[in-house]
Each structure stands twice: as structure tokens, then as C-alpha cells.
Image (tube, rainbow, N blue to C red; front, side, top):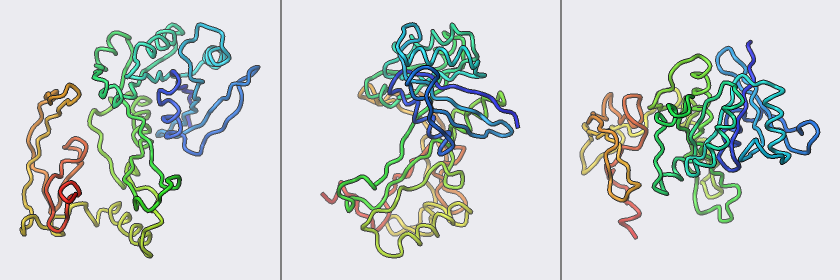
Length: 304
């Protein structure tokens, strides 16, 4: 199996370590860089026939000064000569991230950039055009979202919720790295589900009734093998009738400026076929489109 060395570089708190943890999982170790007391995080994951050895470089704003973190990062790139540098850019503070990115490019190693913290940037009214940035830098630039999983183990009042939906972005990062290694284009729209371990639920809360865990496991297995579909139209009614049609507008709106602006004009497609609601199939953007009110369910905002 081929083995390549890749490093993640970025400023502190840019989401770099979250990406590292999602890709490597438990396959990681911690040591110190030679001659300094700076922690070195390394791990690995497999993409196709390639094992990627991934190193999470110390968070730093620059490679030009002489702090222990900057010296360790610079020395590792020079001496270990990684096959790929991934510059993690904080879209909400892009100017600071680009300062480091330009210094990485000066080291003349194969480099690509990923734009993280897009949700934070959007809340601040900041929009970053990845294609324009890619042309300016002369390297590939991709959008990513280093999401995180919520656990109820640390919640003081564990009766507040039974469970929560969660995204495992490790599935996407593995896909993206595999595309980079094979030279394939990373799809703009990427939708995966339970059977790909891209989505799931968190640990069940203490207030769940006896037998809940067993039933949840049964349902999860059925979702993965395709014998059960979310929003099977034979399982519910709306206004006393079975739902047979639900057109969805695939236009993407930007709400960061206050009033919605259509930044992508999409088609209107039928979301129901084969007896169930296709919430996140490849032909659609990511969920949710489901906005019908099922009989027997009272919405909280209409109850209180």
C-alpha cells in the first residue's frame, strides 16, 4: 500500500484539529517535536489503496518569527518534505489566514487550501468566493465545514433531551481526500446518510424508556439496509390524506444580508417517489425540504 505524508497547517482555532480528529479517529498519537516542548499530533487514515499519514502542525499565524510553535512547524515542513500541505483558512478572519497561507506557498510544496468557518463568516456578512481565491493563489481552494458532535454526557440536566441528530464529517473528509489523491473533482453537492455513517444520533439520554436503545438499534439497521425509509408516505397523513406529491424549489438563498437573495437558481423537482420522501438524494441539495405538517404532531411554536 502506498503511503504519503500530509500536513494540516493553520492559525489557532481555525478548525484544523477538528478536521484532523475526524479523519484519523482513534488512529493517532501525540509526541513532541525534536528540541522543543511543542506537542506533535499525528495519525493516519486509508483512502483507496493509499495510507495517508496526517500531521496536525501547531496552530500559528506565521512561519517568519521564532516562537517554538512556528519553529516546529517550519522545521517539520523543511525536513520531512510532505507530499501535500493542506492550509486550513478561517473564512471569518481570512486576512490573517492568508498571511500564513502565502508563507506556506513560498516553501514550494504541493499545497491546497480549505475554507472553514463559513457559518461564522456568513453571520458576519462575509462571503468568500472559493473559485476567485483559487485563481488568485494558484492552488485548489475548497469549502469545508468542520462540524462537531454533541454529547449529552456532559449536560447538567440530562432530562432536557432524549437524543440529537449529528453529522459525522469524517465521511466527507475521507471522500474529499480520496478525490484529491486520485485527481478527481470534489462534488459541489454531496449527500450521504446512515448507510455511509455520515449521519446518526448521539447517545440516548437517561430519560429514555426501557427498551428504547434496542428499538433504536433495530430502526438504524433498517435504515442502513434500505428496508425502512424516513418519511415513508404510507406511515402518515396530512389533513387526513396520504401525501402523493411534494414539489421542492432547489434555489439557494443567501440570508446574510437580511432579505433573501437567490445566489443559485435551481429547478423545482418532485420529492416523492417510490412511496417515500427523498429528502437528501443526489438529485437534491442537502436536507431539509420536508415542510408539511403531519397529522397528530403539534409544533412547539404553535403550542407555546
